[in-house]
Length: 256
Ligand code: DGL
Image 1 (tube, protein in one colour):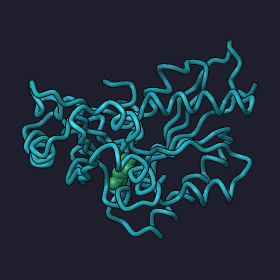
Image 2 (cartoon, protein in one colour; image 1 turned 30 degrees about the vertical axis):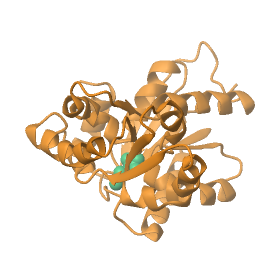
Image 3 (cartoon, protein in one colour; image 1 turned 180 degrees about the vertical axis):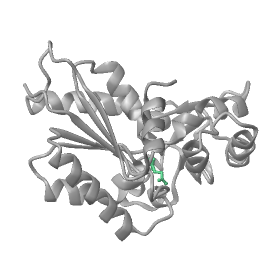
């Protein structure tokens, strides 16, 4: 048993899509969310920059006493997860990876699309996973150009968002994709908009939230780190940005 918080890290607000899963399904667990907010988006930054930002955040979360850390950012996971596991072997880490497997196994058209940042799509993790399913399905890769910025500005339900999503998603549907995998934690905030663009076509949107929550539970159990059943969970938010960003993180975590 351990009542210390679970730490979550993202370049900005996207990781709140994972925070919400943990908040909903693990009510006894305290959560400490770190959203950089200043250097976001990470997707177009160099590997060296992303690695150093991620290490900085993880060290802060460790200093705050986190018992397990979720890298709630596909981009940071792609660049840093191996380094983190090797450098901090006493901390269990959960990383984010696009849910290619369920998409590939359930596709009827034989074509699935993965939406992620440039850096994630170039990563070794993603390259290895897609190679595993390459004989079963055709995997289309697309960068959600402008998506992260829209979410950071709270514009995910705006006409601009619909136009932006449509520019990226329409060609994927036209190419035959019947599954769209959200490979960036910011993108679930755009799920309603993506579904509006899909309209009545038979295309399913898949994200990694539930799978990540299951993985966190497995690791809590295998490391005997579950909080006590009577633990009163606390929720804290950290950012490198200003007070108004912090308030926004909190507001969006609880969905108001
Ligand atoms: N939320 C992030 C991800 O899952 C990063 C987006 C960004 O900062 O570019 O990839």
